[in-house]
Image 1: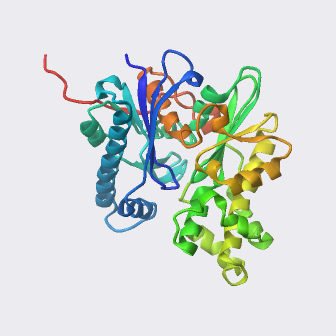
Image 2: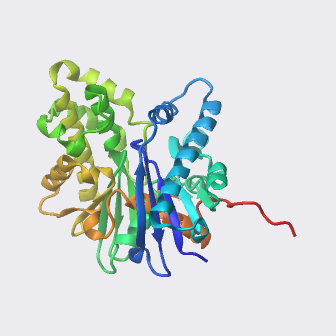
Image 3: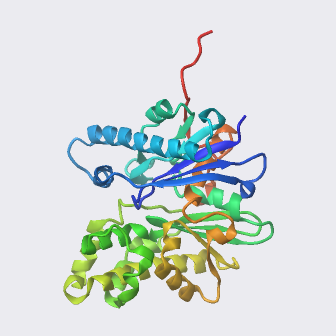
Length: 381
């Protein structure tokens, strides 16, 4: 069987789709070969619709179905770009790991099971690409009583951990999550709070730009203690792991309520709000590290936030003298890690290996994650 897999990831930050083509060979994740990586931006209309589906609205089922089809076509475009980059035939790919786009995440709520919803159309993706697709990674963990997130700590352990040494990885996507792996291989992981999601949201609202490149705008602002204290008063930050979150909590309404409560719009410059949001991500991420991963000799940072020089500088100041490094210095570029994680999870599914870590998600035990959408027609006997 082929050891080549594709991983597709479109995260909470809604900045587009990252796709990777990787060869895992027969060895450990740490020896994977990156064959190709591409990033495609979302079409503005699709991004807006995916963002809108994060909250209740008219005709949601119809709109989500069509958004799933549009997303599958966008994913298929990424797959074609990956194959074209290395002139690889689709038959050489074992499977595509496709997470979909999370629009609701409420594990453990309502009926004690809760749910997590990813807009996707994996059947259409399999039809378009003619490659097996593994999707729906989170719901099995939720059914087993888990959070369904974060799932990347299992890959972080496989990729970055070294025998006899503690490892800490902070993923700065739309939401920040920490993986803490002890020297004996035991692990915990959890969502710390908001990262690029709120930073991008405020940057777009205040400047019309989709993101603050390298955090340059935030670096010109001043942190406002009154606003920061109001943000940090959110009860989620004090909850013990396992825990996960998303735009269901950290959204525009959440931010606006705290801006209004502190009179921040009148008192502060827009860049001061941005600086304070960056400090929120730094403070919560650093606190999570100190409480749950202080035994690690360094902090490895991945996700889009690793390219935010202002955020990285804030983290280095907050955690000094602990080194804060981007994941590229440890073998895999920061914007490739999460897509690689879903390629790895697709591989785990095909090998019928568990993809979750129960101590991370709170599930009843290890579970095989995902559902298979085969590539093409089955020949009749």
